[in-house]
Each structure stands twice: as C-alpha cells, then as structure tokens.
Image 1 (tube, rainbow, N blue to C red):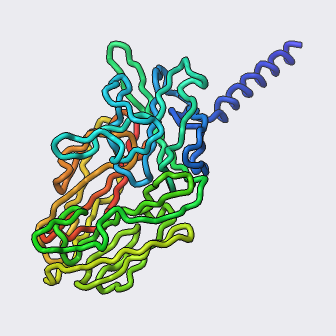
Image 2 (image 1 turned 180 degrees about the vertical axis):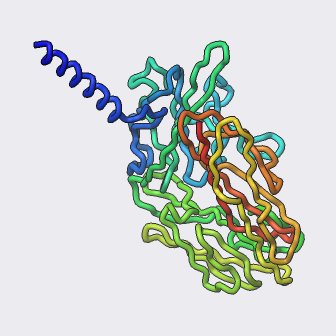
Image 3 (image 1 turned 45 degrees about the vertical axis):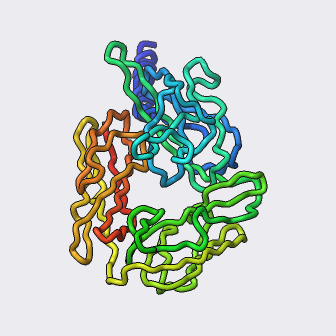
Length: 367
C-alpha cells in the first residue's frame, strides 16, 4: 500500500512538472478580434476584443485606424474633449486637428476607448472607417496603471484588408486639370519646386455607389497607373511618378474596371538631374529604454549635392521622434512587454527639388 501511494505521488509530481514544461509562455497584451489579415467591409461594425495576457493593471484601451503606409499621428487622450470628430474616421490628415503654424496633422482621435467595465472588457463595437479601402492598420494602445508611478502604455497592431460594399462609379484627380508641372515662378502643389528627376504622388479618389469618396492613390487599393509617354513621366513602384523629360503626356488610372485620364504638361529646367537615393539603414533590435538612432547617412545623390531629410513613423504606437530633418533621427525605445516592431520611413530631396523613393527601416524593441 505504501509503495502504491509512493508511486502515485511520484506520478503526480511528474505530471505537474510535465504540465509546467508544456505550458505556453505567458504572452503580452494583444488584439484577438478582428483577426490579423481579416477581410472587412468599409463602414462595417465589428466587435473588438483583446487579451491582456501578462500585462496586468490595464485601465483603458484605445483603438486607432490608419492606412497601411499612413504616418502615425499623435494618439489623442480622450480626456481632452476639445476635439471630437466622428469616431469612425481614418487616421488621415484630412480629418484631424492641424498645427496652426505649419498646417501639419497633430492629433488622431481614438475610434474606440474602452475600460474593464465595458462588454467585452477593454473592447466593444468598433466601426471600420467608411472611407477605408485596401490594407488598414488597427492599433490598440493599452494604458497600464503603476500607482504613484503614473501610467505606461503597451500596444498591439494588426493589418486587415478593407473592401467597400459598393461599386466604384467614378475616378477623379484632386488636382488642377490639365496639370502643369514646372510653370515659371510657381512651386508645385506636391512639395518642392518641380524639377527634372522629381518623384511625386497624385491624389486620386474614387466615388462609390454608396456616395462615399475614398482615396485610391495607392496601388494596394487596386489602382494601376500608365503614362502615354514614359519619356516625360515614368511610372514607378507604389504609384510613384517621376518627371524624366519635358513635353506632354496623359496619365491613365485604372481601378475596379473604371478608368480616368489626366493630361500633364511638363516644362522644367532641362538640366540633367538624377533623383537621390534614400537609405534608412539596416533593421535592428534594441532594448527598451535605450536611445535609438535612425541612420540615413548612406543616402546619396548621384550629382553629389547636399540632401534634405524627412523621417516619419509608419508603424507602432507613436514615439517622440527627434531631429526628423537630419540625417540621423532618434527616439527613446519605449517600455514593452514583448517584442514590438516600430517602422520608420525616410525620404530625401536634393537642392534642385528631386525626391527619392521612400526607404524603410524596422526597429524591434525588446523588454
């Protein structure tokens, strides 16, 4: 009998050890619904849920919508009620408070703010932006109480694919028609002065059968571009266009079986000028709390001219980014509960106004 009890005790101990060894490690805060990669409809209401995981002490979770490549705006604390636009709007600079001096977007308002007392806890009804089309980022930022030490935040982010539940009817260009590039004494509507080698994007929108006008400039929304004369304007990747010569061309945009055309007249300084090349440096992993440098020093201009730098953040919860117009920008790696990816974009411009294609760098922050 004693032997039986002894063997049973040994068996139970072994079983407990096996269970501990086979148990999954505790995970950090994460979005559980909608699922990463989910196919959603514009304007659809879904139930947002999160799993706090090992992140205890969460008091509030805020959800934000952004386009896949949209620059991350400062997330708004909903205790500030000075601005309250519609809560189902995109994280797009057309819809948010602007800086009174430079006109830049400064605030993104949460699409949903939820606490423990909500159903489900820290989640609830979340509306997909009506203007959304193509890949969208859903960012969830959790606020954690640390008592007298104040609060800290953690986040999770997923990408979903949004499709309007309505047919595309008309494509239009949000610019003058015909488009004049390089007119004497006039600066471009798309940034720097027009010049040979300049790379730019056209603001293209689609009017759908539900009456909603949606931005469709990015190829990820289903848009493709053609130029009738590639010796005047050349079509590059990601919907980018480049001035390569003087003359006239017609740009044709196609999306969901619909087409629109835009006549473009180019008259710029015909001095040869190759666009610069942006280099955002290699991706890296860092520890939370360390100062991170983003290195664009390997960016170059074929003619050897000085460069203007423009850094921006396009993934992860917003971090204060310093020296955004220098070759080296920096930020302090925030506290995280498990590995989180922050993505940054770099564009460079030469003194003649030619822009580079964007370069990207990922910074993985570890606990």
